[in-house]
Length: 155
Image 1 (cartoon, helix red, strand yellow):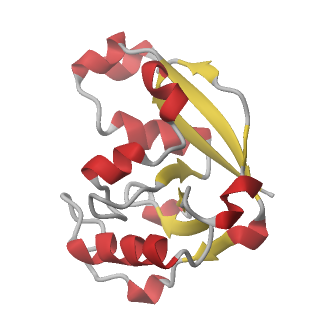
Image 2 (cartoon, rainbow, N blue to C red; image 1 turned 135 degrees about the horizontal axis):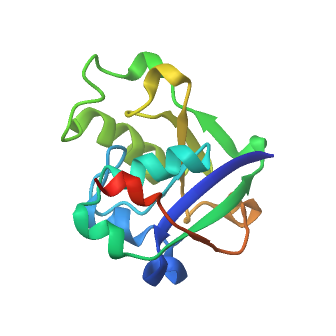
Image 3 (cartoon, rainbow, N blue to C red; image 1 turned 90 degrees about the horizontal axis):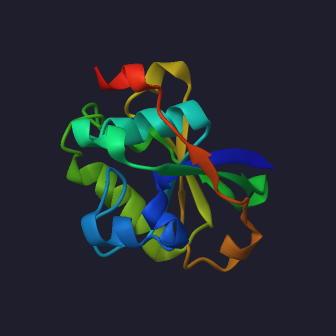
C-alpha cells in the first residue's frame, strides 16, 4: 500500500474526495471540467502544497488531514519524459493539464503518480485520484484528523 495525504479546510472535509474543487477550478494536472483529487506522498508535502495557496487569512482557518492508503496495483506512474522543460511554471502550463486530463478521461488507473512542482529534487510526489475509476473503491481513506500550521509560518 502507498501512503498519501490530503489536507483541506475543515468546512470542506465532507467533499474532500469528490474531485469537485479540481473539476471547478482545474489544477496543475487537470483542466476545469475534470474531476480528480490531489494527494501528496507525505503530510509535510501536503501542508506545503496547501500553504502556497493560502494568504494571511489562512491563520484563521481550521484544517483537517486525511491519511489515504492506495494499493500499488492501481497506481500509474507519469512518464517524466513527457514533461516539458517548464512543467513547474506558475501558472501551470496547458501541457501538464492535458496530461492529467487525458489520464482521467481515459480512466487508465485509479491513481496517477506525478512529481511535486514545489519539491522536484527532493523526490517528492503527488498523486491524482480519479473518483470515476472503478478501482477508486479500493482506495482507503482514514478518518479526518485536526491539523494546524505552526503559527510562525504566518509571519
